[in-house]
View 1 (cartoon, rainbow, N blue to C red):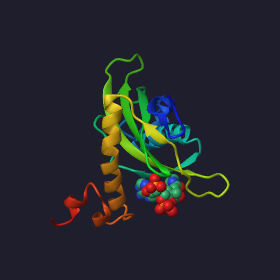
View 2 (cartoon, helix red, strand yellow):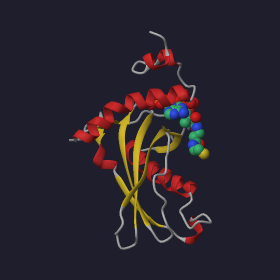
View 3 (cartoon, rainbow, N blue to C red):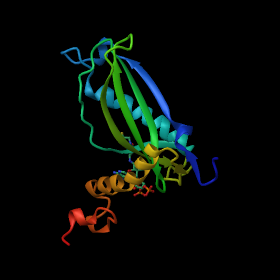
Length: 175
Ligand SMILES: CC(C)(COP(=O)(O)OP(=O)(O)OC[C@H]1O[C@@H](n2cnc3c(N)ncnc32)[C@H](O)[C@@H]1OP(=O)(O)O)[C@@H](O)C(=O)NCCC(=O)NCCS
């Protein structure tokens, strides 16, 4: 099923668990947001590197909100999967849920989109990555929408001008 042109989402999908220990918490006994972001970055980086077959660096992280506090002793589950690859970059979606140690009181905590760039080991320069082959309905929805998320983040990062955007130009420029 996997050709030269691309790889299936399932090939690089990753699920990672962490238990919240005292050193991970703030004075209220809740997981520090920064520690959660670190784990999200690690989960997504492993997923991106598996897909690309190269070392990757985090190029950007889209908006992150924290819906629910995560308590000392809770166990979090991070599920990361690629959504779409472009030329040298790949977008990874990560979802975080939490539950107590026995699995009860499960709840969604947050989600985010990370973008990684693959680097050639010798030159250290960005290198072309395999395309993503979406199969399921959800994978196809993520794949289609990724082009708009990419335009938005590149505009916000000052990498492209709004008038260069194909999909979102009308949001930023007059008709
Ligand atoms: C990410 C990085 C390699 C991009 O380098 P660059 O010289 O801007 O490269 P280019 O302009 O040629 O862009 C390369 C790719 O990065 C993507 N990119 C660059 N900046 C981006 C951003 N802010 N958000 C998303 N993608 C970005 C480009 O869209 C391009 O993707 P494509 O080839 O799929 O179209 C470079 O900025 C870097 O090394 N940053 C530091 C990474 C790092 O250390 N991360 C950990 C933080 S401590």
